[in-house]
Image (cartoon, rainbow, N blue to C red):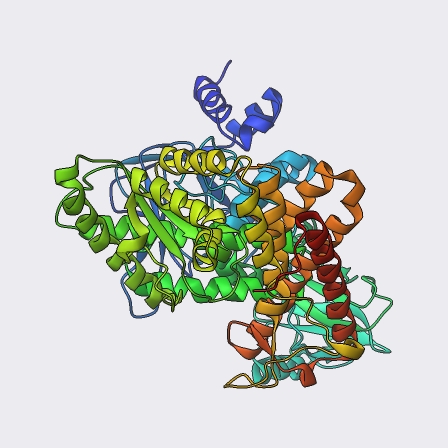
Length: 640
């Protein structure tokens, strides 16, 4: 006889991943084992520190709040599960207790999926396994949903990021504080060592090579139950062989391995086999803790932040994420994209909150422009904020009233950004300055004046506005201004020549006998300015050359040079070298900034090793070559 309830359950599951990724026959087998649970509002499905159930869950009707529980504080809702959302995945990945609360927000019907019934499908079906790992790692119930697909799991439509940047590129946290014992060591001795060192596992070694591992789970199951005496040798309860990997293991690989082998610890050895000495250990608990620095989790936290201080705390976690990426030698392009999106979301959230605090609604459409390094997607460290605002044209009698509104809004935004860590621009190139809070027509007139006047000050002012990104608002406004700029630049040789002279104002930073040119006086005397003498010459060159080709919508320096390499095949080698040098110098500055806890701009050359100095000199040789090209092309040797 047909089980109509099981059929209805199977039909429901077929609409939601990971069950939609299974065959019909597989879904039907699972549906026959599903438990249907009813919960009134406010009832827990499970609580923090509760022993994990033998099921994970999917919401059939209603809603469930997932709550973070901090010691001595009220539970904080960090996510809400609606119809079709999967939660409570810990039984598939670990035997540790739940880390959060799951409380029904309204009357709910929930399907409980037996873990042991489902687990074989997760292991044998790569798509299912990938879905579950992403859900578990990112704290996102359904990373395949339409609103989340290909995004950093945010509500903003224009923030996107490839999934591999979140998982395949994220390094595993390796714990080097390990305890090793011999197989003959008594269980009691090993337990006392673990208690003293406050660790959850001990590695059993012979001739310094790993032969087994014992965790606190083994103590609970084998010793606390009375099955094995505490005086017995540790080898009687150790798990063997040890699952080993080499350094470089990713979070996704680790979680799949733990699920496949039903373990919660992985041993890190020199060559990834038990044949070499132990270097560290990875635990499932440490992976969960590390998710606080997962970009997807950080993005969700940014979009939910209810105060400037919360955004400031998130900003410090972004810096930890940046440090981890650099130490793992992840390509700068991936790093820049991730940090840019997180910075951009922080600014967006700040603007949104400030608009809510204004006494009246926004009078007309506007756009907030991020300029300089953030506009070029090159702002990795805590550097100055450069921004501007353009608002929709209004009748003359409403202009100053409208401007006053946006100046007040910009003052609120820039003040909060300063608290978060984006320092005020010393030159006041910010949207709170009336010079940079203009209507669309005023901006067009401003650029026309800058381009036609072409004085030194005007060139310096306007060139930063060629490196902008739209952080908030209506893209039509900035597109109109961009089109206007390219119209007035067409055939304007004089302006390009003046821009070329600006690009040569900082010559290659190597003096006679290839010695670095350092600051000669002032507070930074004898320090090397990597921004002024290394990064800016490449930024200026890329901007000039890409403008000559009238290429829009590429503001990143390395991407500009890569585009130029395609546009000018005869200079391809030089431009690709420039792209590499730009990334290398920004990465070098970022590492120095993290090391010295500053913006990384000024470097003590005495602290650099020979290898670093050689790499820098190679980059500066590229700067000299591209500046020579500019001198010849624009017939100028004039240094401002």
